[in-house]
Image (cartoon, rainbow, N blue to C red; front, side):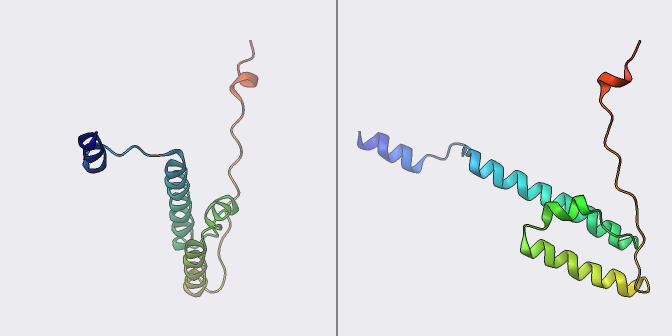
Length: 99
């Protein structure tokens, strides 16, 4: 019984990711990807898409990084940023396959 407790405590087997840890990791990855897209847009002189801003806005550090980058982009591009239209939602495959 003591050996089982020792092995369970000191075993170096693979760590299983819990559902909460998985959720935190996936949210972090989505926020990072959205921030990267927004920063790339600002680098081109184009306003970031609101859909991307909504994703990382819940993380104060990421949102502050975006705001700083936006201020820099405004300074670099004469106080104005261009606009790109929001992407259209993809049509359903069911409606497009009429025979």
